[in-house]
Structure formats: C-alpha cells, structure tokens
Image 1 (tube, rainbow, N blue to C red):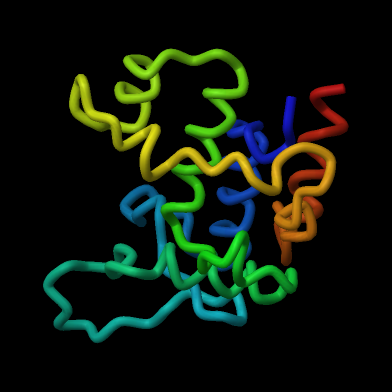
Image 2 (tube, one colour; image 1 turned 180 degrees about the vertical axis):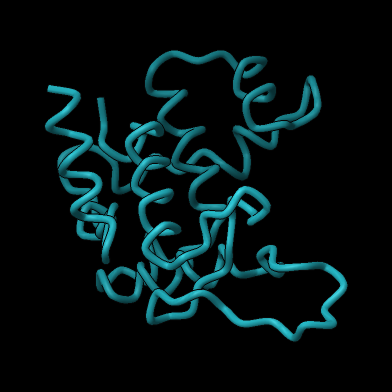
Length: 153
C-alpha cells in the first residue's frame, strides 16, 4: 500500500508531533494550524473560534511542502488542497472505481460529472511522480513513524 494512504501511521505520527509541541491535552483540538517552521500558530486569547485551523491553512501548508519539493506546479496547475481530491479520484479511476462510488467518496452529488471533468488528472502518474519528493512525515514526526513501522512489521 502507498505510504501516503497509511492513515493509521500518519495519525500516530501527527499525535506524536502534538505531544512534542505540548498540544495533546484531552481538550486540545486534533487539527491545529502550524507555522512554516512547524510550531503551533498562536492566536489571541479573545479569539472566538478557538485554536482550530483558520480557513486556508491546509492549502497554505501543502503549497509550502510542494515548493520545498520543487514542484509548485503540476501540469501547469498550482498545487492546492484540491490536488488531494484529484489524486484520490484519479487513483480510483485507475482502480476501476465507478462514477457513483467516486461521487460518494468525493462528496459530490449523485449524477454529478465533477469527478470526471474537474478532478480527473491522469498526467504525472505512474513511475514518475513529482510529489514523491514531498516528505510524508517530515520534522519531528520521523521518529514516531519509524517506531510505528517497526511495531507493525
């Protein structure tokens, strides 16, 4: 199985990062916004929405990683958080997934053609994957992922 789809290992690595940052308390949110240096983003105490990720942080983080990997564009399109949806949809097509299944997984309406017209991006798949250079478990999470791998084997 592809490493980027091994969600349990990734979740364990993320929990290890939160622990290292001191943000793993029972009332702390699971998804937190990080700075470009991998630290917790600070918010004003009076902030009504709490410590959750602000809109756009996931997209911003993905673009930072794509820039570091030297692939800010794939097939002339800027890498965005929608690239994840496109990648999953394209993989499902390659595996023979039906449009109905892809609409369900992608949360598109039944009968929608969005999965075929917008999120089907077969270019740059196969042996040469430019996103393979993006670190899947970068920073302090490396040790947690290595430990989880050893325990699983």
